[in-house]
Amino acid sequence: MHSSRPFLLTLLIAAPLAAEPDPGSVEAAAIFEAAGFARQAGQWSACGDPGTPSYAPGSIETIRDLNGDGRAEAVVTEGSTFCYGMTGLGYTLVSQQADGRWKRVAGGQGIPRFLETRGSDNWPDIEVGGPGFCFPVLRWNGSEYALDRHEYEGRSCRPGI
Image (cartoon, rainbow, N blue to C red; front, side):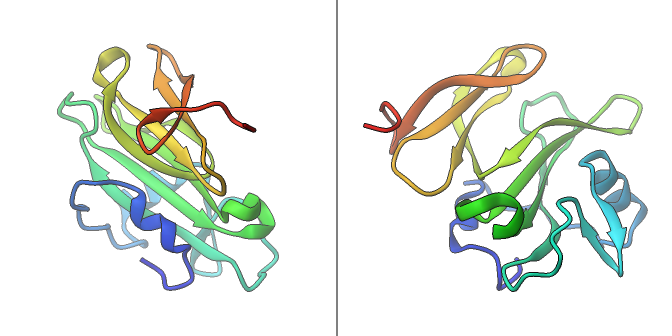
């Protein structure tokens, strides 16, 4: 993990991280490209940050099978308050398909944390953290991750209250 990343990034996942592939490898390139990143000056980038002090280039944070289908998923992150506001982090979840290619599944601004609760096809719910105390929880509905509820420390909450 890059030292300039927000400390909350440690909440990304509860399970041990798989080894990150070399950012220059063919596998890493396929993951980054599926996540919408481009290689610029030896670093992977998606948001177009002009080089602010808060910028941390793209990183593959984890690779593991999240839904039990026998194929890996990868979480790609990028740090930038210029692009991602006070949260300072953007994430993209990509999934390896049966043909070996990677496909974008979800992504956005915030710090993803995979929960024990599950949606369709055994995909884990994703709590998207950031500043504040009431976070959206996304659930896979069979075709996309959509807002399911809001939680704080495992309890239901209403944003803005």
